[in-house]
Image (cartoon, rainbow, N blue to C red; front, side, top):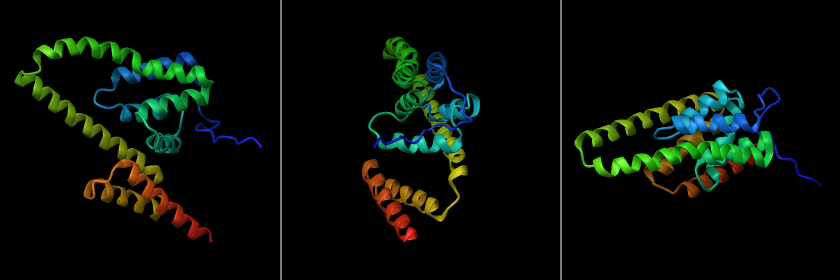
Length: 189
């Protein structure tokens, strides 16, 4: 018996070819200063319409369980979904190629000017902007999933475990998966 994977994209999704995957993720990699998740959401859901809100949120949840960067995992999954191995390779190469070249060049300059006050202030400002982008994306992602008490419980427990108890991500996810599994199992009984 062959096990079928649940598709991450719906029939209404636009199906990108390898060139579109490469260029889409390359633009994402070039624009993603301080974190690409907010921009990934905008590009994948709002602009390209490769996934809808729910699909993006579900895929992000899966990608967070995997080792490695969330957006790299997401690019592989989206590439695989639409164009198989070639799509996964196109997506990842698009995501990392240009930023890698740029970082190598900028590092040479940064190495000489990192001790200047203006450079330190610039980096602090960029960090604050990145945090704001993450907060805004988190808020957007909450809208489609805030439909049950279990979701609210999971969100609350995530904050408690991560911020108050400072549990590692893997342990937090394991505990939350167990709690959700037990609650859903009790509801079905």
